[in-house]
Length: 284
Image 1 (cartoon, rainbow, N blue to C red):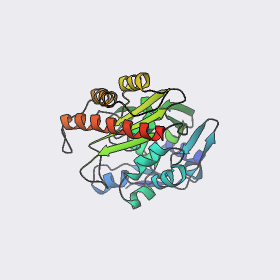
Image 2: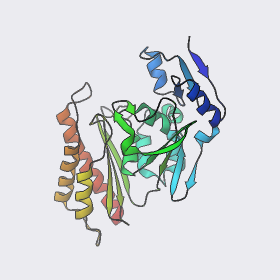
Image 3: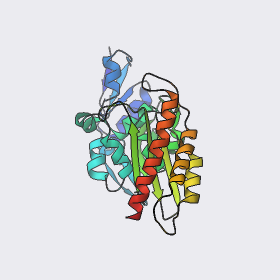
Image 4: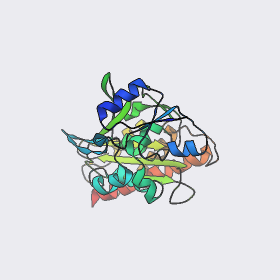
């Protein structure tokens, strides 16, 4: 028998999670229900978070946006597309319209899949994950959140409350490779954020390492060599070298969706293309 727990306030949800740390949180259910239906998982309890209104809210918190863990992909696209274009672009590639209506940002993070579409743009934007329990609240940079395939720093009694991320201050791009355009798990994915005001570059790699990760050397190279003072056509050699550094930052494996060699090659192409697109947007 499986217990179904239905708190209606955030305080109640945290209390239930403290009392039943084995309870699996459910918001959209787009990951959890698949595991249940295929008998890959049989938790003792499910913690339904859909009735907690705080999780479905977003707003400004000083210089950043605080996006509740229960905000769906559809709302990320429709309500936050102008503020977080990279995350919105990634959200558009997630599943079908039905999945985008149900799936949530917090659920994507909670699954901690290396192939999670929301992870690369959050990395590129330097987002922070807000975790909460009855013991208090803590903030973890998204780059430190993932610890392994489908593993994270989330403690047994903690829930993901929100993501803190600054509105885009420059062009953002996201691209992924898959066997088809829709409803596909990425073979590899890449996100890019340009910050012209501070002359820096953010990156995020997906589905090409045990965890989503940044490409620090590629970021430093692009930041140092992009012609920030006089935007003009992007040097193809600069874009190519950027792609090589992104590819070198990955640690892919061979699996049923693709080989490690293909993932490295595709990442170099995605990185080169997204940098070119973002630079062209900046120069418009």
